[in-house]
Length: 334
Image (cartoon, rainbow, N blue to C red; front, side):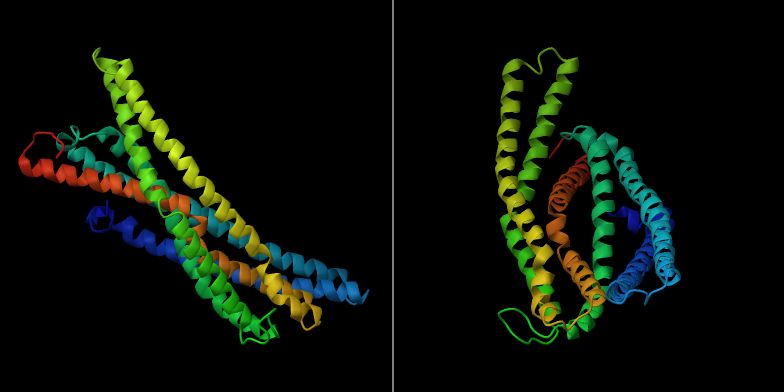
């Protein structure tokens, strides 16, 4: 799977492409920082305009909107061209490097259970999941690095926390505690999901293989064997529904609760009138960015589970190919 990064043929994509993608994501994060600063200026202007009629001209108002459109336009272009189009091609080249290796060694691979599925479907899933999760992880890390100092600075405006009283840089500690605590709890709740997802794919592959063999052989895919295999499929799916039920209940309860956490933390400061509307908007948005970055595992747990399952199947596939290469050309699974 990782030949993409150490095979000279793919260096233009694996090295230069990766550096370009990292640079574009970093730049998009900087644009997000600029948008956050714009929200602070814009809401302060709204507060001034509403509290003192005539103090803000229509030209100043439109100028602020034009500033946002300028930043947003660049943000859209960067994300569509680099973080979209380029990343699509980058991940397909990764998939192509895997597919070419499996195709070149097909004589050793074709006898392995589910070989065609692993070559076509699993490499496709691996590429798509890597694209979504990899870019998301990089963006989360860079977003955290960019917004942590901002939230740290904005926390000086918070005079105290409910129930705790005065706390230095309070919002930073609240975001860290709630995000890391929620991630730990939900990871524990969903700890069984990777194994269940792997079992689903394994049993679905066995069911599919029997049906495919039945297309060419009259003695295969008989009712008894097919019913037995489908019963296995049914059992593992029903088991997964139960586990996903309590995981999703925990996940969405946590994420919805996090929406009001910054407002709760800001409550004493807002009630005391010690903060402007612009600072509130800027602070809540920065808090959300930091929390969202640290909630990466929570928000993407289902995709991570599927990626773990796909990676495990492809590793088994490659070990079986290596085994067949060592024992000769006989395409037999170890």
